[in-house]
Length: 262
Image (cartoon, rainbow, N blue to C red; front, side, top):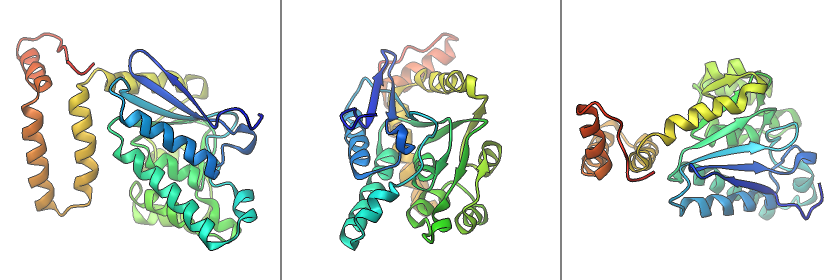
């Protein structure tokens, strides 16, 4: 791949599904500063879009994402560069959570270190049965501290720490059992499985999905009492929406709801 090709390939569908493909296949889609900046820019553009309803993050070539670009990191060993790089990556991961639209990771191959972090940062993840996952920094003397933030918010503590301490790979079935991914499909059926998951979301009210995703992540940081107070406020506002009225009326009238947001 020439350096002139875009780092992120974007494909928009009329039904509201947008796919962003990491496009450094020769480097296993490693997250260089340029790659992170390109993905950040695409996500920020999508956040402002009313036509995009669901986002899929995929990888070109054999790997989903092999993490940070180690060559770039070794070529820039100064603390200032490294701090900026990890802050940039952390901002990207948080942007995914703040995006109004649900984000699905399409994991067809390996997802290691910050690539595994990317899977954990996505709202949902569907993996091929041949996919493998690791936070492998410890194998080169580097504890995956920033991936640990996302990992510890998906897995139980002991499961997360075992991955972080050993750097060992887990397969898709173990990743699902540990809570890192939602669904597994044979490689040839991966896109069909993602279609099913995306279709289930696209059929719902865009207003309710947007409110709900924002609420979900905000309440996680609150104590239980504050979380209930906040969730009650959000639910009352959601109930006042035109979509909620239509959805409840449709349910009582035993007909299909027609939401304004899609």
